[in-house]
Amino acid sequence: MYWNNVLFADESKINIFGSDGRIMVWRRKNEELNPKNLVGRVKYGCGGALVWGCMSASGLGNLVFIDGIMNRALYLNILRDNLKLSAQNLGIGNNFVFHQDNDPKHTALNVRLWCLYNCPQNLKTPPQSPDLNPIEHIWRELEVRI
Image (tube, rainbow, N blue to C red):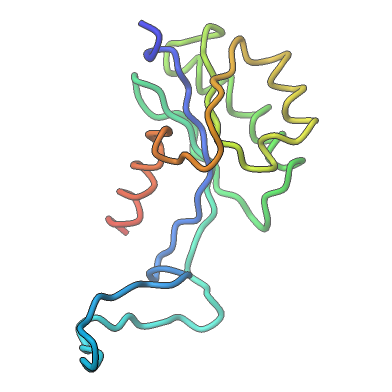
């Protein structure tokens, strides 16, 4: 089956102290903010971890904790060290189809060239379509449980 050989990969920032972005609250016009809808903040946005991971139909691959900012060079090193190893550990060996979103570091020339020579097939998806990568659900579940 085709989908059994797809290796989905992505990175995410897991926030320990809630969101680092906006949180929307629905309320009626002229209604005061309800304290139960207010979220505390952590000074300077600390309390999170940047992670890279991958998964297939047979399970989860490697999880990499990232120090600092992820750029295309760091992303390529993560792929070199973890992608094929994860595919082998998940039982799909060198016969996998690689899926990643269209983040600029994923589409950088050095990453595309590496994927061309090291990934048997690459699954192309339209830009801005996170719903096509099931690993997004893993990140969400992880954030909820933390």
